[in-house]
Length: 168
Length: 117
Image (cartoon, rainbow over all chains, first blue to last red; front, top):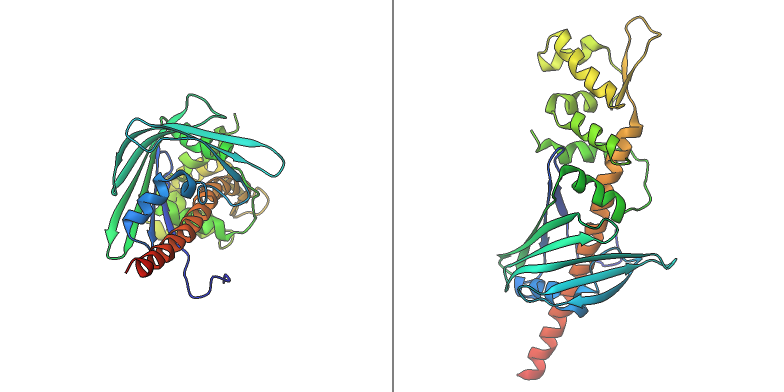
């Protein structure tokens, strides 16, 4: 599928239930959790992976200590900028980072996000949990800050329904 | 507000019977009687669900044919699917890149180990 050869790309599962304030994603990464933690807390590394490839990542603030501030800006090819900021509430190496998250395009709508790194032998299960202040915040933030071209396929519908099955 | 109809869509989707009805309609149009069958629901019961789906713009009911078939209206669903899709694209791509960074780190550590010993 990709030119990466034998390596399989991580497959992420999302739970996005209608009418709820949270989003939970789970990914298995082929690396020990100490490294995953490092990729989350070292600004040089973080800038290499956070967000879609087409954005240039500018790290404005990145204090990975408890109480430390972070601010990251995505810049598109057309010069448009999307800035995100927050405070690291808890940073527990190498298991957990809990931080606030705010898209500056929608000031005052603050989410709490917790990334948990669980060891799986030489791999890591990364659980990212985002809780928003309201259902509307959850639904609106993504629509405003993370826009991208749409495609028409009906497969997406099936996927959507699949995602929502767990909603019961 | 732009998020408004998303909220209505998501509220309509927040019910397993209604999601199953949509999944059935994704395969093609069906009459109310046909839709009621697999769910062990009364016709009024199914009509209630259909009304919610219709108000959310997720389905349409034909007025022409005598059996008034229901069919899917993909527009609103597409908005909801796009919304989920945008979020997923953001993170799918991030995690792919994270994986690349991690593989580089692993290689680097191996190299350092070799040089250190």
